[in-house]
Image (cartoon, rainbow, N blue to C red; front, side, top):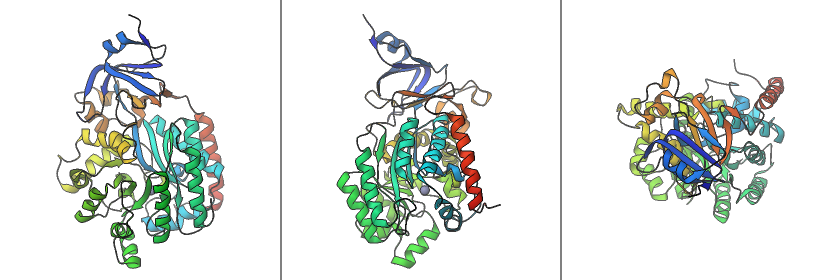
Amino acid sequence: MDREQVDLIVQNGSVLIMDEAFTVVEDGAVAVAGQYIAEVGPGADVRKKYQSRDILDAEGGIVLPGLVNAHTHAAMTLFRGIADDLPLMEWLNDYIFPAETHLNPEVVYDGTLLACAEMIRSGTTCFCDMYLFEQEVARAARDAGLRAVVGEVLYDFPSPNYGPPQEGLRYSEQLIRDWKGHPIIYPAVEPHAVYTCSPRYLEQIMELAVRHSVPYIIHLAESPGELAQVREKFGKTPVEHMEELGLLSDLVIADHSVCLSPGEIEIYRRRKVKVAHCPESNMKLASGVAPVPHMLRAGVVVGLGTDGCASNNNLDLFQEMDTAAKLHKVHTMDPTVMDAASVLSMATRGGAAALGLAEEIGSLEPGKRADLIVVETRSPHLTPMYNPYSHLVYAARGADVRHTVINGRVAMRDRHLLTLDEEAVMARAREIAAEIRKTVTIKT
Ligand SMILES: [Zn+2]
């Protein structure tokens, strides 16, 4: 019998499907046809049925869905280390917002490419971005071949990109029109926060989200400082404020969601609000610990994000998984919460569901988009291997990723980036940093 021709076979690894049953196929293989997964199964079966000129050999390593970074500000790679060890509001107002006034389309494009290089290297195949000049983020992600949800950050003061707030609505609508239907770029609307957007503006942004059925992504209940500010201004918590405005629905992705009461978790559950959990950023800015085990028990969909590079300071979701697992154990004084498989699930299918992409990505199942990574395990720190979930969450790091495939395209092969010129991207970042140093105070 003739074997069916496919475009890529990834073989000779432990395949973690990341389905609900947490199926692992030992000595498994994945057949990829075009942008999609054709089949996943035992290597012998897949090879009997399919042939491909292109083969990726996992060499006994782990094959798993690409990681999903549910919240970041990609171009902030350019501000990595510019101001550390500060409270959120001071960090934002005294360093980050002033630095951002110097951004332009070209700088955001180049900073995003730098982020894409870091993400592809560390096994992230999809990221959700909130930033300025988001058209450039979309272009950079497309050019790097990295799947991305993109939305222009909207707030009630003049933006260095679009100018006055009303222009932000127009810019967002254009972004939606330009990218809706693209195979790897998904537009969204992204009000910055309830303390930076008026109630009317938040509503107008939601009208746009509903009209185009795109995600509505907002930093919400991130820190006690935000809570105090919103309470003083509106006499409510940020979540109560959104709920009373009628703005909580399944379109909403609430980034951070650190300061939530049990009643507010119940509101999230009822309204199908989804969460992007960013533990390292919350720790670094001393924002607090999001009640994630409680949210998961309540059935709230939670994805994992790094937040921007100025508050993390990297985009490595392997580190983020390790942190997430351990933070909640010590916070609840219960070592059984956030087990490795659950945390990996949060970084794959959870992130996909949070971004509204559960049908497309997040697990290795036929018909889904072919976003997958191969983690090499032939290293002292990953030998021997009893449990792949444990290794991925507690022992591996981003640098252990050997191959990255996004939408059926090999973006990294044997640790060589194929979709962008990494040396040129880094050289450009160093040039931009030299300009930034001239105008922005660097905290020492
Ligand atoms: Zn953020």
